[in-house]
Length: 328
Ligand code: AMP
Ligand code: MG
Image 1 (tube, rainbow, N blue to C red):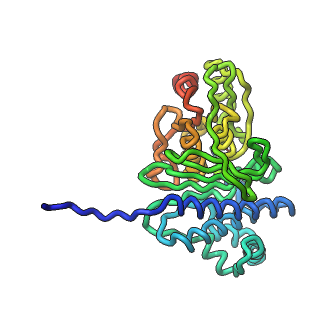
Image 2: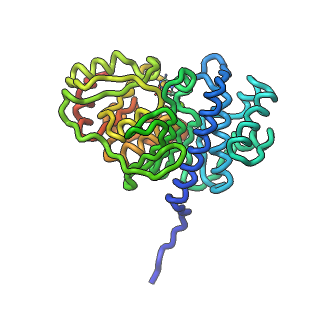
Image 3: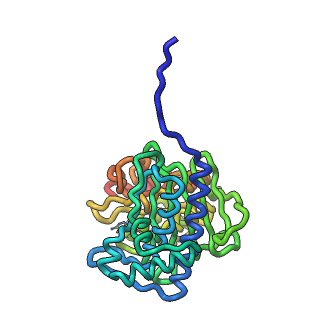
């Protein structure tokens, strides 16, 4: 008998999720430490703001990924060159000190740069990392998220969101995680038992609650208002920063998150959606672009073939897509 043997690298998704959860927990602790001290903003024209916590968080996460899964692929938002250009050696040393303190292992300036810039390997899966999603919210004292998505086969197979300022089920400061076929869970960000979560059962348009971005440039509020009107969504609409929006939909706190593209040339970044999309799907919801197409995570750093993003409890997905109308 002739048997065709193919070699594929396989991995243990539970082990990957275990490392991702621990990394997000430690990175979230670092972010809240920086927040308590009043985070300094490092800015470069034409870019989103960034703080020392963005680099510290990325170093914590990628340090753990490099140690546990050196051959896994990596897509991460930050790089050490900008930290060095804007803050110089003192900023690098300050972040290395923070990482040492929070992770209780000594991290030199050289270690820090190596961790932030860990390029990953060529193996499966690929880690999509946003060390602080919603930096503007982080700086304002509003919502932000430490986001890790696990990509494979063009999709997001699992995600972890650290949301230190989000309240779910009476707990403020939560970690939400899950993925397609895995379910979705919430646990206290400081550690504790995971509890299953699920999307809202609401399908009556009059009760549908809508989430959008605080930043107008990240999703035109006029478009959201027109969808709300056309589809008769009557539960109210709220603007919050970061993938905390996905966490809220996954936990049944809202029925839909609408992210219209407000610039023709804008392509969504994979690390802004990888974690959240997996979790909402795991919680029983649905995620697509505004044309109803699945998000294609196989195209590098951006969702090049998708236009906007829509996450819902599934029940109201077609209703909201219909409300978008032509040309939106
Ligand atoms: P949010 O907190 O939901 O407003 O999203 C924050 C993310 O928006 C950041 O991590 C950026 O990657 C992303 N972003 C930056 N510029 C734009 C833009 N013009 N349209 C959509 N998203 C953007
Ligand atoms: Mg982001």
